[in-house]
Length: 364
Image (cartoon, one colour):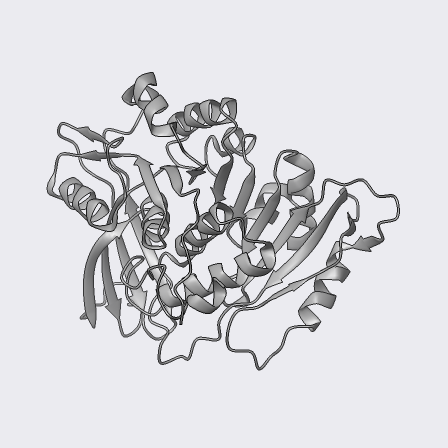
């Protein structure tokens, strides 16, 4: 099978958290005061930006990362792992003393869920850690900027400079965070966790929340919400003004697209609407298309851990943007990358490389 060519636009700059994950799998989550034994244990790099950029690097892009670690053993491990995976650490900040970020992750083998306990790095990153000359160099030649919503003061400065250079920005809206609204104002693309759209907009449903997001963020070309085993949903803005577009209730449209899903399909697919005036009752209307991305039906015996699945999905979306993929190819590809990741413990253990045979059909 022919290996697909890499995209020409491959330089990605990411700003956010990079850390270490201590992952312990257990037969089932313990009750208070219980003492149990792990069934497996791993120590891997972690953090939203660290994971997404590692995914992008393995897919063949050239990521650069802006983040902060300490000069401790964890920080050394974080940097070494990035270097092995091809993530440029030239713009990382290393503090004297303090501690690097780390997370305890408990994976429940029975329910296939994970619980995370995060300890932030100290001292925290501040804008003064990133001189203008270093910021300028980090953005030179960049094709896209990724922000995970953390380190918001530094991310804001990077976003300002990226916008002035016309570099598109993708924002990971995982949850409500301090400073996230300011960063979202710069976004060209937004990828949300399942709960974020309604939490941010107070809309009555996820489809109506996506309409609200595009109305509030006028520069956003598309917004995606990940839905776990339910796949994902994308609302793509259409710029063309056409009075002949059909008006469609976005909730009803979503139901119709879901009804077209093939229950017997085992690999990810995409089901798309026509362009129309998508209406959200009491919220407003946008010209656009709705795309339903289905998840891979992973056999229970192969499903190990969902830690970092969203980061893998975003890494694949970043690749797709650089490769100028249409949504009909982007969403199945991103869902497939996330599914491959879920077959091993940790966020990075099974992140695929761009020549992985399981990805080749999605990159034709």
